[in-house]
Image 1 (spheres, rainbow, N blue to C red):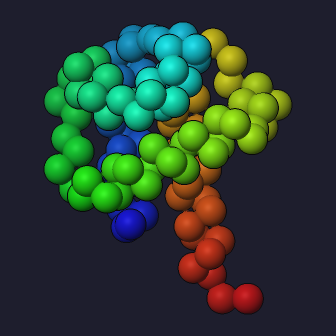
Image 2 (cartoon, helix red, strand yellow):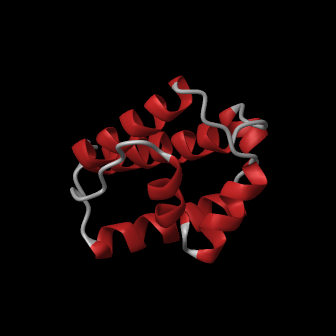
Length: 106
């Protein structure tokens, strides 16, 4: 998965936040757990374009976010507790960071 694809997703989420979009973290957690987060985003984020991801990549992101949701205290690690869109943006940034670390030479 290209870092530029994740960066574009981050821009879409940032735009949603700028437009005043809000969802409780519980709602985002439930959509991630159900595997329906991208359908939810398509219905709730104006002009979101996910065509730069393959179906396999979207499935991988859902699995990644499920792992993060089960392992990380979002309030402590990401300083997020009120807006699920902020939470999702933090997950995307975490994914970018992990991939960048994995690509950097040791």
